Length: 138
Image (cartoon, rainbow, N blue to C red; front, side):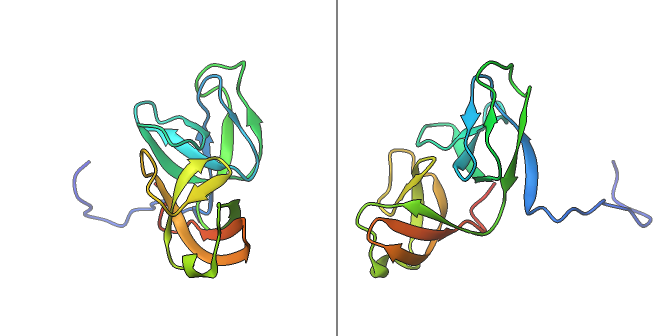
């Protein structure tokens, strides 16, 4: 399509909660950190693995363990603050970037694949941090 020469209805959506196709054999749990495989564009539970990019937090649980790629979709939060496990959480962690360890755990230390998933905005206790995901989702 060429550059606009007349008004265009871009069909704006809020974008805070979007549906994404789930990979074959994948299970995503409500509240879990979610990644997408860059090779396929399909989502799966968050993991520190090559070829994955953080895309948000699962709004609901979806089980596609018996399904084909894209047979099911999961709605994913694209912004907000969520609480996750972090070993040795301390008030001094506030403001630091966190990296995805798995779908329920984050780390301020670089991980094998260093998939950034948010910024710590609060520390409710010594084992958990509150993570703002805004600006970290793909």
